[in-house]
Length: 75
Image (cartoon, rainbow, N blue to C red; front, side, top):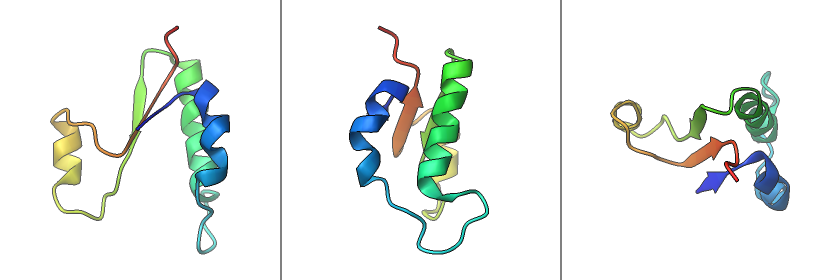
C-alpha cells in the first residue's frame, strides 16, 4: 500500500488507535509525523512495517517494500 499526504485523509478513519497508552501518540500520530517528514523532505520515503516477524528489518534494508510506503505525491 502507498500513502501520500493527500491520500491519507481518505483512509485515516481506518487507521487503528493504540490499544494501550503509547508515549508516541498511537498509529495515527506516527503516520501524521512521517507524512509531515516526507512533505518537508520530498526526496525521501518512509515504510511502516511489522518488526515482529523475524527477517523483516533485513528485507527492508535490502530494498524490499513491506507494509505501507509513505512518500510525497509526485504529480
